[in-house]
Length: 123
Image (cartoon, rainbow, N blue to C red; front, side, top):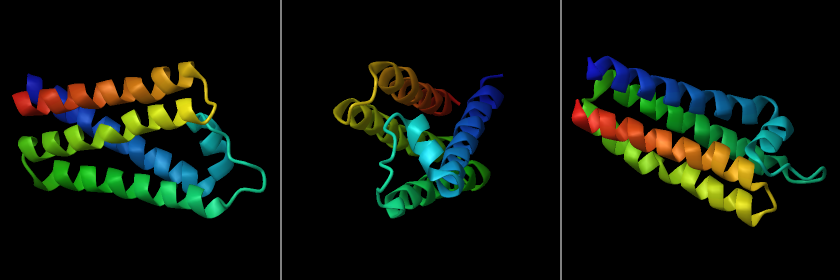
């Protein structure tokens, strides 16, 4: 009973990261605002594209692991990937974003990813 929930949560999380990456590639300024630190009007769009590509790639790696590796490998991936939203929390706080976005979106995401890792380790 635990395995379907553990894998299901991991799939949802990786699909969400793919969505975020695609959003940064297709609508970078909107995505940056949703991230919690709006892009500058005259900013370098290349950095937003880089973020999109990296998020998209991370999500695809997660899906590949889910498809071709065991639960422990996916759990270790999730454990390491949890560093990203923790870093995002600090970035939002450091660059004038709200605490609500920093903790309510990014830190909460890190917690959910860590829960996913724990569930996968338990499978």
